[in-house]
Image 1 (cartoon, rainbow, N blue to C red):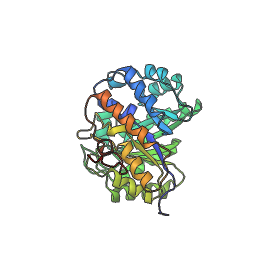
Image 2 (cartoon, rainbow, N blue to C red; image 1 turned 60 degrees about the vertical axis):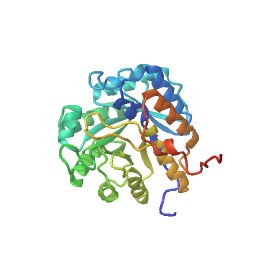
Image 3 (spheres, rainbow, N blue to C red; image 1 turned 90 degrees about the horizontal axis):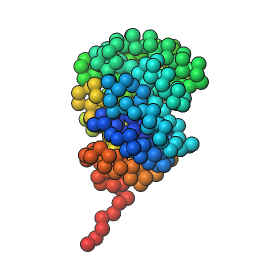
Image 4 (cartoon, one colour; image 1 turned 135 degrees about the vertical axis):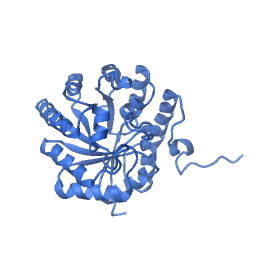
Length: 305
């Protein structure tokens, strides 16, 4: 067990990444889910995104959701922004932790943001300067880090070049998005090793989808490399509206269940997280893919009758 970290930080992304892939959810329900997750012991939550309503109508009420949330002082809340205008809205709403996305695949970036990867990186450099000037931090999320639904393979060198640009612009953290679940443990190892050889000081976070059933295996590979920050989504909510077949983020309760059983501290109350997953399921009105939500933790015992 010494080869694994003693503690892992989970960022819950269901309120943003999860709900943006569903039919629009009432504001009150979004607030209820955000508040429930804030009481699970999770210490980081991606709360909303400040995108144009025409692009992602599911996030049109970002300001209202954030204003209505019962914020837990022990939780660091973040917001996703697509550009400088989104960053201005997020800062005005009181966020200090911002995320911005760029795809390593040019085709996916154009589908997602209607710009080339290089054009997005130019804008990100300007955005980082603005946010840093306001006292905030910026995480750059590199989507399609392990493959693209339009272009297929994405070379590790291509992803590293995007990280080089983001690091030079002053990114505070880099996240790698497995946008359509194309990652496997060997690919995770290759990418993390390549980036760390050039940017050893840069904090890394990994965001896996379970589209092809490899999310937990990918987490295990990352743990063996000492990675301690991961995204996950309550109930397995989520996907990507601009990536065909991108259903199914790694479920938060599946990640916590595995880590805690391995003796790795997450600080999360699994029972409270499962309750939040049940709430998420009721809110979206469909069965969610989380296996732990269905079967319960391994400590559950059948009732003899």
